[in-house]
Structure formats: C-alpha cells, structure tokens
Image (tube, rainbow, N blue to C red; front, side, top):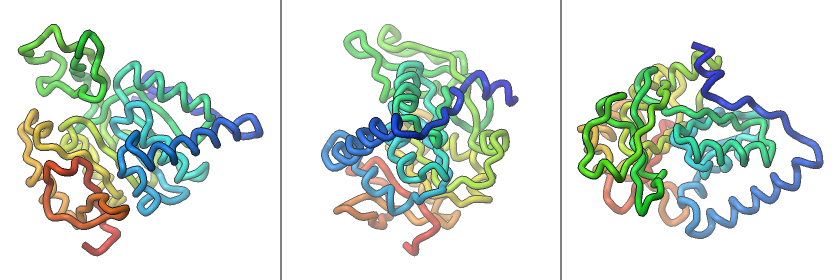
Length: 264
C-alpha cells in the first residue's frame, strides 16, 4: 500500500535560508490581501481561531491551494498540511507553487479521498471547451460512469481514492487537528472514511455543504449535520468577522465549521 502513496504523491521539499524568505513573504502578503477582498473565500480569515502552530491539517479537494497555503502559514514548520487534489492541472499548479515558496510543512498528493481505497471515475464538466475544475466530482457509479445528458461537455478520468483513516495509518499520523473538505457533495463519503480519525482525534472540520451537490449522491444536508451534532460537534458559519453558531444549512452559506472545542 505504501507504494501506492509513493506513486500518487510528490516528495516533500526541504527549505529555508535567505532564498526562501522572499517568495514566502510575497505569498504571505498575497494571501492576506486576497482574503481581505473577494478573491478568497471569507472563511480563510477565520482559520487563525481554529488552527495553531504545530497542528496537522488535511486539505481535501485542495484545488490550487487556497486553503493549503493559508494552513501552512498557520501551522508553521512544526506542523504539517497534507493536501489532496485529484485533478492533474490544479495539482500541478499547487505542487509548483509549493516548490516556489519552499514550504517543507506542505505535502501534496494527487488523489481523491472517500470511504475506502479504490479507483473511481472523476467527472470534469467543460464550458466553452475549457474544464471547470471547481465543479469536478466523483461519479456515483464508480469507475464506469453513468451516461451524462451532455456527454460532450464532460471529461472522465480514473483517479485513485484513499481514505483519511488509511492516510493517517500509512503516514503514521498520531494526531489530526483540522480537516477542510470541499468535494462537491462527496463529503459524507470522506467522513465515512475518517470514522476512526474522528473518534480518536476529534478534529475541527470545515465542510462545504450544498444540498444541490449532496443530492447527486442521495444525501440530505440536515441528516449530515444532525449526525455531526450527535457526535458532539457544534456548527458555525463565518459572519461579521467571527464564527457564529447556527442550527442548519441554508442557501446563504456554503462553508460550515464543526468543532467540539467550543460551547455552542
């Protein structure tokens, strides 16, 4: 199994020294500027209240690294960020940026995460001939995708799928403090594959939850959030520059924080 990881991931990069300081400082400044405006999701501004130096974080559905680089800055070289992105181009850009800024605490892997280790079909929609990476999703039928109404407007790839518990076991992680999961409705499968990690570590979770995406796999947002509440998680949204408790998913927000560390 370790061989599968070696094939799927990029090797970690050592860093440091004066040559690394300038690009790293530029990236940090860019992240602060972007998160203050509309370029980044506003929830990135709330990460410092839930992520600390030395933490171990997983960025699942990392895309180009919006959260990965923010998390890497927060955990420092004493911590670790494991980023997972199954799409070739976003993963290549993410890994290239990691090399550019020389972040030894950021480890990138080209893979999806789900309930268990298996190959799956990844559906990438296309618009005007270009891939829409932000709407890529795992096909619900496995490696033999269902027929699409607009088959010419999607591209199908076979990707490796791992589970959080498997990653934790193979990489020898004795702690997991934070999981960010944005996988276009596949979030319940990722949580199913993190059952042992949730029980052992009680990590804080930042989930994208949209009923339109969950419905693709037959899930309901209220049932998902109720299950997390029954596990002792409080539910929050980023509003007015702070995390505020909420009772349910609405169409006004798509990212929800779940933590056992605060009183609801």
